[in-house]
Length: 284
Image (cartoon, rainbow, N blue to C red; front, side):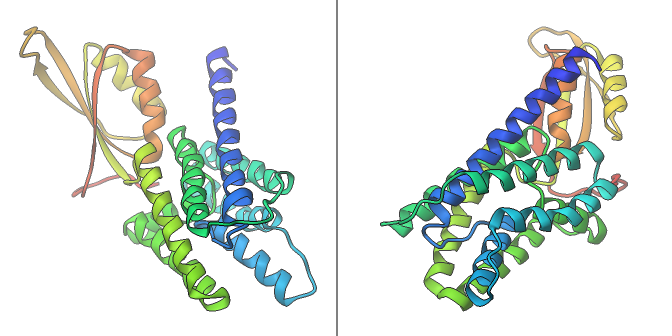
């Protein structure tokens, strides 16, 4: 394994670990004490743990349930999305499951509103940096991607459906005030994740470079994406260059950034949201 590749893997593992720490800290210090539920599989595990403990003789921890729920999802992601992305996502789940057991739970909360907001913000910071460096926190993220590819519908639809289920269940079992605080926490989470990492599924990258052939070869070596090459000319310098236009998913942005930095650090790149695509776009 090359030194640069090893360094990159270590860096990714460190980022995934930091994201897991932030998520676990938000859960045990803010959301759990306030009886407010997180989004996605973490929220499901949190809700199931409380229901099982309250209505059965069993006592199953949130960390264990989170790990068990993610096993079939990891298998699905491995087959449908990508091996490295799924591997790092599952490592993130393992870290968080362990940290939820290690970090002590805060025993009381005097201000539920404050705990809801801060819990959502800290949790979202963990999710955001994990996504930004080419992984995910597992669970809903992977399921939403697979369903989106199968049904050709926006990822956000599936996030909304599952999170709505958490809110409704929490409200029906433990009171609608808890459901409303959960909704507030989810809103805070969404805003922070948007600020750290784009939530849109598809992005268009426009790369102005002096090394079009080298960059094209490097991109095709890492990503299975079509590239359109357009001759361009600098208005100030009058230099002839090439612009490479490529549409990618948000999970490929991290890899594309590193390819550009390695091949042509002087390239000018503009990343924009892609609202819709007509024509062939590889989804697998």
